[in-house]
Image (tube, rainbow, N blue to C red; front, side, top):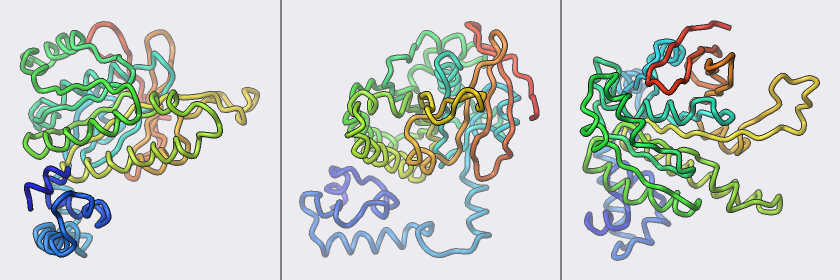
Length: 308
């Protein structure tokens, strides 16, 4: 039965409890009685899915949560240590604000030992825009004194051309995560394919529904495997925010669906020259503040903290 569940894409007790009975019944060879038995066993093995005190939750967070360094002190300070596991973090901004550069850096820092601000784990990179460049990883690895070949071996990569592929590639990834220690899942970007596949206003409701399904899957993966999920997002002009009154009349694509699904929302914008500014827009445990950093072809960040 466990083999059948795995073939159906359910690999852990937590995964079993996160799947609806309706979806479990679609797995070949699992009867209603078997499903109930398996759910009962899973509940006993997963205390996290039962009622417990806030103290226990706090202890569990202190034990499990991993914070991954951005490789820039100012950003780490802004985010109270870095990118948090079990969270979905959204990074949005115009082109050339350093979104993909930060993703490449995190591919390396995730592999550092915890005492150096890493997660000592592997990275999964889902690329919807074709912007991943392995050669950019090498100088970043050198900066952190890591063997570039070993770093590249620990990054699994897939190119997704449609929103359907975006969802489908998560199935084999979950199987990998059940076997190997992953700490970061990057989706760069979450909305690019959806904007192409659903272009008209009449398709907006369906687009948002598909987006919600992808986000729900990512949320479950983050919790189930204790990984940090980082997704980049595009911005669009906000027709209601007239340029006369609003300094930056651009808003992230995806509307309320993405806003509610993201645990942490970070906005990136251009400063002077190579300077870029990251702002915490929404986070349950962080103050709304900014930090500036520089993007350059050299793999180093001249980062200076700038409080609001």
